[in-house]
Length: 273
Image 1 (cartoon, rainbow, N blue to C red):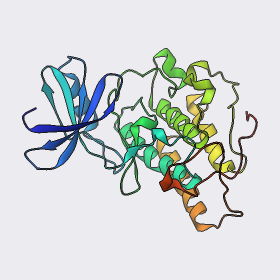
Image 2: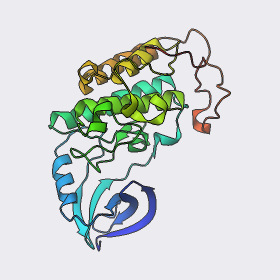
Image 3: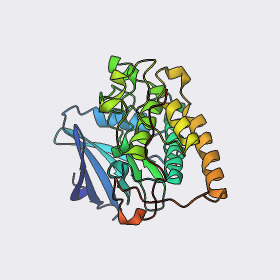
């Protein structure tokens, strides 16, 4: 750790801490992901698995080392924040951007023969330049995590590239509605005929895309590249048209100040199959 001087703790995961730090060699500021386990080969394996992926919306590790037996990944420091505190606040255009950017990052991972397996709002960063960045390489290409953003097949230990699409759909669902699909139990309680609890009536394209991502059958889900293309087309359509009516405040939630005026125009509607 001689090369790096830790500044502040900026996040905690299930088995890691993330610190901002000064790189004494370059003088720049980076992020250090320090794992709590003593598996010295873990950082090396993760670095080798992730370093070949190329996408501007992917926070790739820069290098790895071991400090007092603990694996450490060095990552670029994202100047923004994770979106996990914005559930229910994001506009339609922001959600299409998020789906486009994160699915593009996933396409790079999947093209490399790996899967992320921990796509969730805490691993999606809103950067200072307005891009949504995918981070969280704690388990890239290894075991699934087993929480509310896991696809049905992950409960059986069969995580795959298709599972990442389900997880991204669950993240978009959470950010759109402020709640979780399937009562926060993730895909472990989903069945082939399970309805989604709520969607937005006035946003049929976005709702339909999220529904397809959350399909029980992995083969019915969009691919990462397909989702990126769909999201880009819908974002262009949205930005080129004028809203048919002004958006009004959602009284159920108070958004962050920088999101002022960015509200959903309608309440939740009954279940959709």
